[in-house]
Length: 587
Image 1 (cartoon, rainbow, N blue to C red):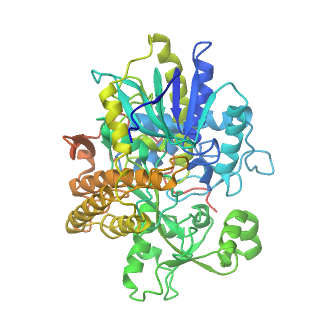
Image 2 (cartoon, one colour; image 1 turned 45 degrees about the vertical axis):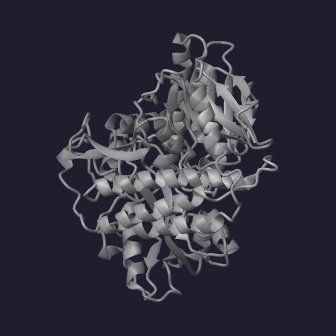
């Protein structure tokens, strides 16, 4: 069948891919900053406000609002937590603008966050931070933010392309700029090409190529796969964050891998081995309040000590804090555990490190522009702000801050742009052919192949890595990719053909897995989320570099670029001399 015929053509001025915190904030800001009459379109793989990772945020939103906390302190925590690898200008803007954005969330968007008796915003303790700065709505903060943003966007004249999957960034014929995006209308199975003067890629992360992972299964890093094929540079691809406490409810349920939030450990939750021992102080002086990478490695090390296949993870215990107190403070977490048969308030819950967040992403400037004219990137698709490790609470702050920045930037930039750009028709045809590859081949189940990839990434490219493991991982990923290319999908009905979309998901996951693994091989030291057992030392901080992955002649190549210490150098601080740099105010 010839699916290159009858591609639907659609024009807009600003196209936003994704409706998480970054995408929805960008839409609202673009409407304010763009010239009157500007057409704004949002496209999403699922439904507006009902999918994506922001909705799943539990813990909260980092913002320095006083009480001993400052933007400078937040910035230093972010730089030190990222092991001196963040883009410092991006990190500074994140910390500075978080103050503005949280006020906007409350006063303009309509969010209600928890408050202290005196009316000030309540801020709780999160690991790796020197102040209690995490604003929250109980332990279900993301739902509050996304629901309010969704209400704002749905009430405005913003075009919505729901259940539209982006599959290719289509350049102009000379390759100098982006012409638009090729999509699949999942409701009909037909292709749709949308031209736009400015495109924001805010499709989010989703490292679901791992055995244990937090995002929903439809989050498959499509944005980074598209960017790689379009010739864009991706930085920090080895930096996959494992949240230390993913619920381990058994392999029969999708609840396994979902997060038990950071605030549990911040409030005093303890991690206990199967031998009944509290162990985290064996790995770090901060114990359970160490950064996520340190705690994940501590748990993983304890798991490797245990030879009993019936005992996979470790336990989190909250009972010593008082069951009624835990039920009141962490209702969402208590209910989540109860749904899976566990009593978080009075008992112990088994947990395991779970692939949660991706620090790597497209190289962007501080205004979200990329090297390709017309393409902007914000949220988890963009690299740089977190370096090698993201602080809990900095994720949703990053999405909303840079979503707003992207909207403002696109609105200003299109004032200087002329007509819509014409696409490279050969590139358009090639992307259609790529998506249609499985048609005509013998159909077979996809799930066993996805499970195989997840085992490969967990075993060889996971919490702790070695050269031999990473090289073995590359070989095994290639085997999965080869099997995928021979696996067919029935094409008799393409409307909501979820098997087809599962196949496309797998191809994105395989492509990004190769980039993660090659970047991991390139980094011969241990920083943040990337830990090499054969190179356990962090290396010279003054000579810090980040990896750059690009696609060259169909193969992922990795190079290095030096980190620019534009604000502060290792060993220095921008805090005043009389300001303590130890943990303060934490319960």
